[in-house]
Image (cartoon, rainbow, N blue to C red; front, side, top):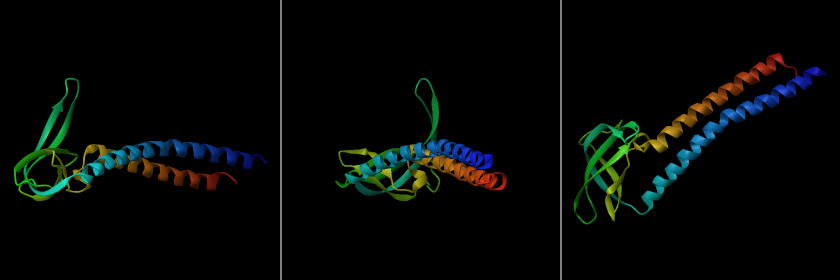
Length: 159
């Protein structure tokens, strides 16, 4: 009789441990989802234009206490009124982008210096990219752990 009790005890611990490991993935994906929704909300009232990348710069931003490395992409475009505009966006990565490349940007007519590049997943803000990737890593670890523990339970504990 002690074996089924042991099996249920181990299973309960397994479920708790998997839940604890799944929590960071869920938190990361929640943060990424709300950041993505914010970026999508920007596009609802925005106009689009074809832009040319004029510069890609790796910089260090310092706020007085800490610093962070950022990638800025500077573009030029013509707004709906025909006025030439220049704007900069901070992106997670400039992979797939090159100076002279043409791509679509979204901008607000009231504030055309605020843009959103339409260059793909890696060219979004870090608040979307980093939590998505980190959540994926946590999920893979959680699933791998689940399979490893499930195999251990099948071999070593009678159900």
